[in-house]
Image (cartoon, rainbow, N blue to C red; front, side, top):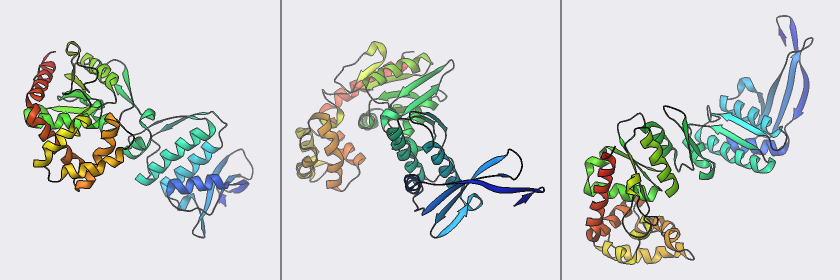
Length: 339
């Protein structure tokens, strides 16, 4: 090949080893039969560049015929595999140009290579697929404040991350809870007690009682009307704008208590019989772990969505505990009004 009277030639070639080909195939979801990285350069002069050539479906092709995501994955993975053990790797939005399945595959690859070679990998992302494929222990949300930033560990969902990062710029009130079940339970309570409050608040799960407490103080320090509602095992701290869900156990345990399931029979035909069958899923577990395992199985037994099951069980609970629910709503309202 000649460019401006200078001849470009292949200076060196290196075959992709089978583990690398296998990893690329898994991430992109297609089988690659062969791959080579050619180093090309001018016949005379210092300039060189790398040009990948792969074989798929019996056809060999290079970058001009690759998709943008394919180019990125091949180059990035080859570069990562070439690094020495225990390297620090920084990636900025590696999901760009990748379809959702490839984003999930990339997340699994990064976890695998970090374990295999002892790498520390730090990446920024806006991808729900990549974010939620990683374990909660690997997720960190960085919230920019007027002065400085806050680091929030173990964010459960990217939707929660987006709500937390944007709430400083909105006029909505913020209620922080521990997990998705608490979010749903409190949502159901507000639907029954104060729909106006529900419309004007964001209820966001943030991980555990410590995160609830800490983040309430952080957001209130930024002028956000924020309160926390944690599970009842720790108890409320109203002077710190932190309250507790009703009862004496986690909300999923409360709703799956034998007496509450029996009370729900009038609202959801066959729920008691379905509960007896669903209990098998929680064998060997107790308390909240048992309830969290059984809850989706019970919904499947009944042929309904989890949110609908939760709503019916909350209705059954509310029939006997409405006063307790209304007291919590009044406390939340007072906490949000207290600047």
